[in-house]
Amino acid sequence: MKTVSLKIDDSIFGETEKILSRLKKPRNRYINEAIDYYNKFQKRLILEKRLKMESELVKKDSMDVLKDFEEIDYVD
Image (cartoon, rainbow, N blue to C red; front, side, top):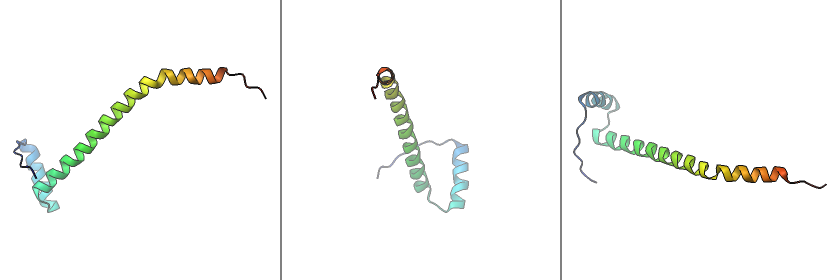
């Protein structure tokens, strides 16, 4: 484990302490879980942005292929 020193806004610290007293959970565990949750959230946002970008890159080609298929004269 790594040791980290951080500054927390007084209001956030106070709210956190109130929650911790009700949860009966150590502050360190609570902060670790919060950072883990936020990391997963950020990874999803990064993935979403990447997928949107890649989707835009292939959009024109996909539309061209679809148009080509629509123009095929199918013989029965």
